[in-house]
Length: 98
Image (cartoon, rainbow, N blue to C red; front, top):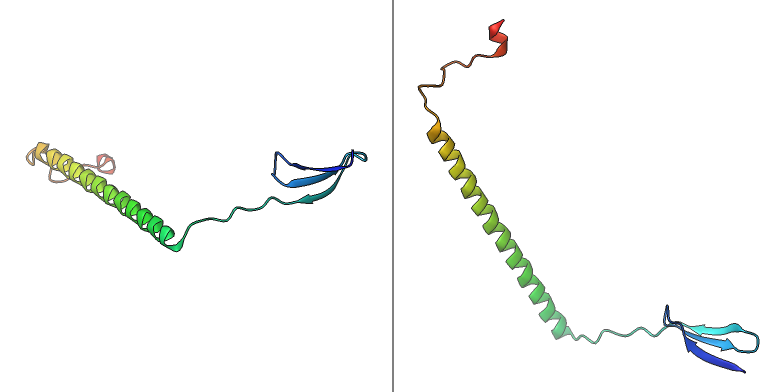
């Protein structure tokens, strides 16, 4: 049978097998593919990421401002509903009732 080379389906390394002895004789790790990005491409990617981050921040700021306006409006409505003549000048506490 002799020796033959196979690729491991799990880790993609090359295994040299001895068919007669049924053992692994040698192994080589898989070749790592190099990133084929140039400096200009990476700079473009960074600019796009920066733009997306700025857009997310702007959206979060708009949402916070809208929420603040809603809270302010609710507070004003509650203040309008309060009649100063109905509120006592001095609040009665439970301790005062003893």
